[in-house]
Length: 274
Image 1 (cartoon, rainbow, N blue to C red):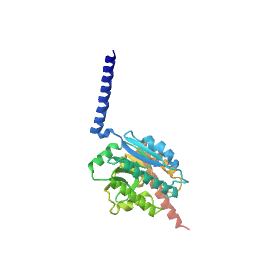
Image 2 (cartoon, rainbow, N blue to C red):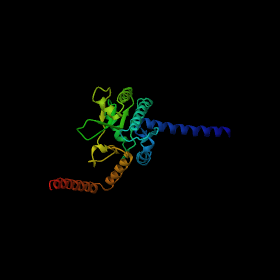
Image 3 (cartoon, one colour):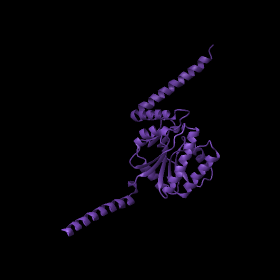
Image 4 (cartoon, helix red, strand yellow):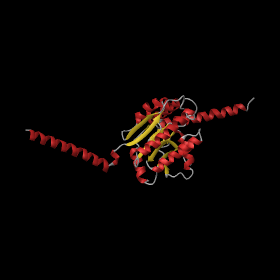
């Protein structure tokens, strides 16, 4: 009896081992099955955007690694709190690249929503460009050359670590600079990395509104002054209208733009009359 139980236990263990081994082998043969790591960080002021928009639309093919940064008086764009948060972010980027040596990871701001799964597109881009180290969003539409630092695909190498250390050094020398300013300064010279742009489907508000083609993701950047969070939420509301009504929404925007132009021209004409 004991021998039969031992045999059954051994057979069960063997079956479980084979099942696990098969799963691991399939993952190695087909890396698409392993989620891409996506890193992000945010201050408490952006916690609502993180939960309600970023995390709520994040596909299962992206494995989230999120860090809460210490609270500041304000983290609106350009403030001292914003610059300090960005400095903390660059420190975290360097640590994550060290931790994932040889892998591909993503670093993302939290003011982003995903409209479709980006994982396959990112893997395709990486596979087609084996010598490239970094992929950025454009800051604006072509022919502008600057990049946006809010969504970056990274190959975890010593070159990328050195690059972001240089970003940090530049920010320390120029206290009012954020990471994007430092990155663009370095990319204009001999920066030690090979880089490229992500496709236009990795969209940002600074590319213009409304977008002209399909979107994989939308980055609610291009906010000014106070109430950055409120501005971003209003952008997401406009995006929701665009995805729901499509051509009708775009037609309404054109009418509004034309009406605004007529009103402005009328004001100019009226000024010429006594």
